[in-house]
Length: 361
Ligand SMILES: O=P(O)(O)OC[C@H]1O[C@H](O)[C@H](O)[C@@H](O)[C@@H]1O
Image (cartoon, rainbow, N blue to C red):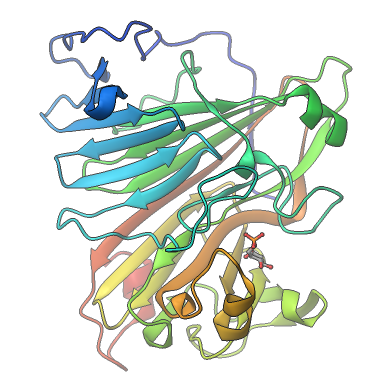
């Protein structure tokens, strides 16, 4: 298992979100983010993040706990505190890169259909909890006091969220934890999610969990999409009683429903969208498995929060820990990181060398 455990850290960084709603000028250029909290449209609280080199990010917190981030006025991500859920990620041309269903319900207790739901402490039905655990339909908070991140993180536009279990959560999953999620935008527009989950049990007991960043990518036409990096790997097929098989042949292509959990996957996976001439590259750390899901037509019709034809325009490739659950003792922390980039690709059938994509050449 490649999950990463790091010891507890006592130090902390200054509170990045001023408690007052009064506009606060940014401090002079510094390598750390500067913040401004003021009133935005309709009196909504707005947090503005600025980067040293002039780019900026805005976050708007509305009554429904909407958090909106904008960088350079073009690229932006929307993160709902409901579910700690990223619902939008756009490139410099304003093109949306994540799929969000037109029928998505942004209303508890239903998880939002699309974007990047967080599956924790259980992926799928691999346990006694509700499908995909409860993190995706709980209200998270802004983390005012996150422990420091390694200094090599180049991103200056980020937000830290935190989830702790409620008393009701403890009844269904009797473990105390602190789940810290940092959502960051890299200088090139990359979207980076880092999860740090700490066991804070006072009874000395370890706990185990499974996990996934259930990322819905927006694609032009599912029948024109290839996934590279998973060929020849073993997988569990959820459509065949979770039996284990080995993938044969080249890159994955799609012509019917798929719901597979690939095991011991490489740290880099590429999704090539032939029609859009775009390649998504996933880089992951601490997340050995990868789930590939498309409900196709029949299941699409059976889902109330998903359009009948929308399966054509999405593909989930989910960086995950499923086969071997993570176990952490009190005081221990697990870290799982996902980095997404979208790069132009000049893919023409038969001309692509998968190694070039996977090696970023
Ligand atoms: O409908 P949801 O609970 O959001 O789950 C949507 C899908 O998520 C994952 O990809 C699972 O492997 C699928 O079995 C499941 O159908």
